[in-house]
Structure formats: C-alpha cells, structure tokens
Length: 240
Length: 191
Image (tube, rainbow over all chains, first blue to last red; front, top):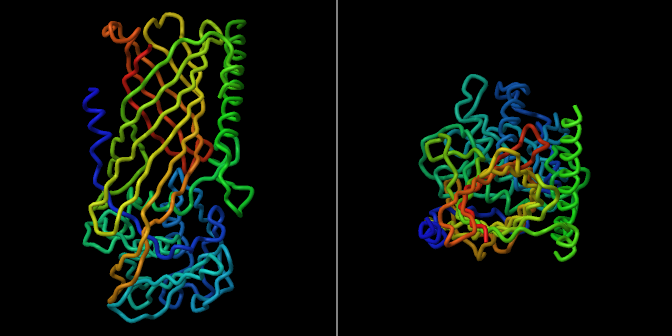
C-alpha cells in the first residue's frame, strides 16, 4: 500500500494543457458576468429568443460548474448592443447571429480586451430554426473563448480542435476546469471560503487573496461554534 | 498556530498521519462526450486531536494533494497542487469501539502555474498565436466535511493504532445548483 502511494506521487498522470487566448484578457466581472442576447438576436435565422436563451443557459451552466473558480455567468436578457459592434459594455458577453458563409467557422468570438467583455457571432448560414445540430456545442465553445481560453488538443475539451466523438458537450473536461480555475480562481474573503459558495457575490473588483491565516482562524472559530451547537443539540436529546 | 493550539485547550491525543488518495466527483466528459471519472491523486496529511468532552475531539488536519499532471500534447504543461486544512470535530459515539465520525469545515488552497510562452494553434482555416499559463494562480475554497475513521488493532508494533479514514468534502455547500463533492480515502497511523 505504502509503495503504491509513493509511486503515485512520482508518476504523473497524462493530461492536456489548456492555453490562453491572451495573457492580459479577463472578463471584467467574472463572478457576475451578464450573458445577453444581442439586439438582433438570431431571429433572422429563424431561431427564436426563447430557443437561444435555452441554449445560452445550458452553456452557462457548464462554465459555472467549476467549484474552485469564481466564474459565474447570469442570463441578462436582451442587450441594446448589436453583435456587429466593436465595443461591448464591461462585464457582458452578448450573442447573436450573422451570415458568415457556409463551410467556414460556425461561430466567432471577438474580445473587447479594454472592457473585459466579448461578443459571440453564430453563423446563420450554418444554423437555422429547423437545423440546430451542433449549435449548443459551438455556443459552449465560443463562450469558452469569451472566458479567455483558446483551442485545446484534448478531444474531451469543449475547446478542442481535434476529432472527437461528441457534437454537443455534456460536461467540461478536466482541462477546461483547470483553465477556469487558473483564469478566475476563488479568492474568498468570507468565513473559510464557505459563504462564497452561495450563488450571490456581494462585490467584484480587485482580487487580493484572503490572508490564509485569517481563513484558518475563521475556520477554527466556526469549528468551535459547530462543536458547541452539536453539544447543545446532544443535551436537548438527552434531556428529552 | 500556537494561538489555535492554545485555544483548543484540552489534552492532545498524539499525532495522526494519513496517506491515501483524493478524488474529485465533479462531472467531466471524456473524448466521446460520455461522463468520465476524475483521476485519483495521491494525498498526505498530518493532524492531532484535542479533547473537548469525553465524546468529542477537535481534530485539525493539514494535508497536501499532488495533482500529478503531465501534458501529452505540444501546448505545454501546467503544475497543480492543493494544500488543505480541515477543522474537524471527531465524535466517538458510545458503543462504537473502533469507529469515530468526523465533521467540520475545511479550506482548500489550489495552485496552478505554468512556464509561459507562446504556441501556434489552428484557428478556422488559418492559425493563431496563443499563450501558455505563465504565472501562479491560487484558489481558496471552503468545504463542509463529513467522514469516519475506522481503527484496526494490527500493526501495533508500527503504530499505537492503525486504521482507515474516508472523508467527503462538499464544495459550494450553500449552492444547490453548483454544489460539488470530493473525497479522500486514506490509511491512518496514530502515533
């Protein structure tokens, strides 16, 4: 058993390497990024706002699901900004459709590096209300670009550019999750990091790491409180 | 730390050392889009117990998880490691001579770092320049913990007691939507 554990420390497990689209790009409000339908949406391609929203919500869920990251998209309704605009309001990612020619990229993401925002253009020559095959997969991939990741060699990754056995992703890959933690690590200042587990964040902005010692002290105090509560409950049961 | 130890008061019950494996239960997919299993990563830990009542001990533990990843592509690699600190309460229920249950809170500190540099990658019908992670990033996460220690009497010439520990960690415990789980299964030596 002991030999097995020592070996496990020495032998690395094969993995893939996430890579970044730009070293300085980050979403401006990572824990409260508004994911919006552009002013034109995809109605010209026959895709209703309701169908587009359903796909956006599914894509958001995948990227929101990394426990050690503070990345959090929220559906923000319809934006007044066109997907053709070069300037996207800070903290927003907008999506809309545009004719880009069949056979080329099915989706393109443009980053607004100064504002920490992005626009996703889905190709209306490739998708329509009657043919949504692969739409969700492309949207999830493009949202990964808006996060700041670029193509991966991992065929399991939603950012992959390699041959793979899926059209629409079910989950992120391990590599995608590591990339999200790298770009948007949790920097919890709350009690032992627990309160940030809530879906709501009170503040955004500079992310100075919480003093680890402070976290430990807070955690210790909480553990004592839990212990006191347990004793109190035990007493009530005994008295009963 | 001294302050914490002073706070704990009570009698310390030696040191316990753990060696085992850590596994995240976060859903990930494989290359076929099917649900995949996360790898087992080796983990070590050290802790002690402080008497609080006859049935409860405060059982803090410091540990290290080695995410031994090695890239098999040409894009480069990153290093990942986790240090965790658990503030558990150990409950020794009457009638259970070899089993103790533990619950409490934890802080997980995960670091990811890369060597940096640029790579050329395919993009549409052409290529583009992309960048490897070039600095160290640290993530702090809080957990709720729940687990058990089961002690065995053999190997007493090595340890006072020897046993196994299983402990589950709940990440984002207050978020019903994004709650995630991981666990450690380890051998424990009580010195």
